[in-house]
Length: 140
Image (cartoon, rainbow, N blue to C red):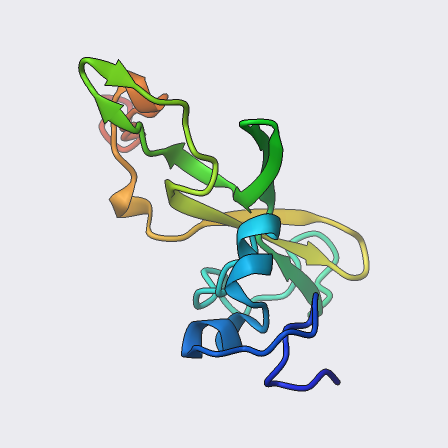
């Protein structure tokens, strides 16, 4: 087990509560896209395919090149659009809405995707999102 006061990547000191929570210093987090894990979105049910009860929980990361430097951040359902109506900046892969998390069954490898804070996801074509209500059909 690593020392809880040093970064697991560079062994530098962890100075803040957030650094200690994610076990990675701010400098390494900016380079690698590591964020503090939020509470789980998945219930305690076994795997829906094989009924095994052990999973790997992971936050997939988006990899990008920003000004000639590789960057990483959690994968989001939608991304903030930086700038204003006169000057739109490139999307920052580290800024978005609805962080994805996956659960991978340790027996069969089945993957379930969940989204954190789905009500915070902006809706509109500029975000490539839309509201869909499958319960609002005359055939129900």
